[in-house]
Image 1 (cartoon, rainbow, N blue to C red):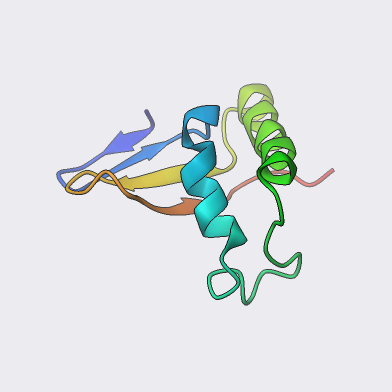
Image 2: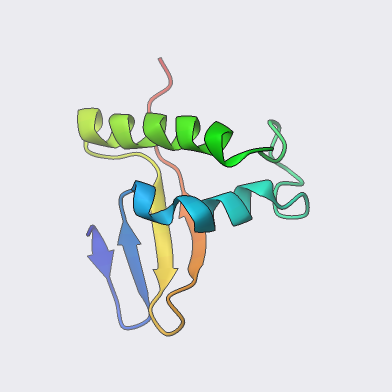
Length: 84
């Protein structure tokens, strides 16, 4: 875990959150301003998630998952990474 407050946890990406991340990244309204658009399949997102996890392992930062502690629903993901 990276950061925890009374209301949220900020954690590195993990396969544990694949289903919830798919909900977020598959929703066209949520992805309206994402140039890549919504993901179509869980397998497509799993490949992307693998990249996020590897980036975090290699560099110690990257994409994060924000979780509301009150509901345990994932709030959003955050991104800070290197594009090489």
